[in-house]
Amino acid sequence: MPPRIKRLIGSILIVLLVIVYAVAAMVVAEARLSQASGLVHFAYFLFSGLLWVLPAMLIVKWMYGAPKKRS
Image (cartoon, rainbow, N blue to C red):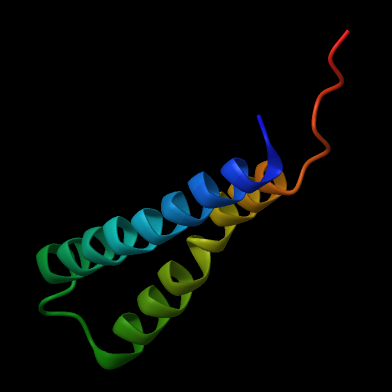
């Protein structure tokens, strides 16, 4: 696959990942943390705010990986 196409697909995937992940994190927070203290909210959003980076790193690694050689 040409590198430009991989980067386009990867960019779209990262944008979709961030949108879906943010909505899911908010839904979980609303459902589970509605009666929790501010410290629990802070810890949850700190953790969930950093967790999306892991799948995004995999997408970026795929985007900028070396193209396979054709034989």
